[in-house]
Image (cartoon, rainbow, N blue to C red; front, side, top):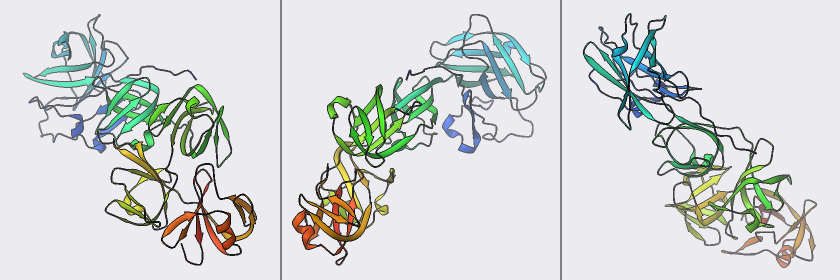
Length: 421
């Protein structure tokens, strides 16, 4: 898949009172902002300033009519009946170069006008500008910008604490405080991004690429364990393991208990974010002060962790007794710290009806192995979790048990029905 990078028009405008007060974009509430699907973000500040009865004429909006051009459209807060070109000038903020106005055309509505700069004056993408408007001896200044636009980038990492993301093809972007985003969900996703000259992400749209979560086997193709489906790995496929980018060749033949797989338009693997877990997950007995206590006496401080359930981040209050916590204490997470985990519960209940040599047994007509590809089965013996093997299965033959499985299908815990644990 060939990545496309193209520029679309973008604009930001901020209305200012005649006194010269400049309102920042963050001052606008969400309901006062509206998004123009072509031009990026426009801030309409008409509702931000309480207008007196004798309203002073002010510019409410500045918009570039075409990319990299000399044509601007300005919108006023009330009808205007006469304008002169000397009332307007555009300043390039970085160089302080002033661009003069060749012509002003008042539109039929008389609430907007087209400003045409002199030939040779071009408003460029990614540069900040100021429109100066003089009226009745007062000067209003409006900052605006033609946003950069990137169409086909993947979010390779995200940090919710400092609100930064890394976007393939662009680099590091700071996420505007005005944007409400799920940093965990963004990782691995392909987005369309609008960003300004200060590398601040002003607007984004996630593409609707298919996203799959499962255990994963790495080979010439990626195989999802639960579904059994395989997906092609291309030269453009990116693999992250425990938060670090790596090569597929380094993990050929390996199975992962958790993977997020993003497909491209062709249905091939575009981006893979995988984790390895500690080989002994914790069966939760209680949680206190961000410390998880397990049935087998384990303790784990999760104060710096991101814990997922049903692929979404959850809080400690969402934990339940008996939940099984899979974790990696060294994996990088989206709050800039280390520690990632997943609550995953899948179980089958039935009687052990047959024991087989080689550490396997039958429940409900299906054979299960005591030792999986990643995890081994355990059973609670008093206050200790012990390995569950052929001898333990024989002692429970004919009795009802609940079998608990990892996301990649390994048996991790055999729960005795008679004792409830």
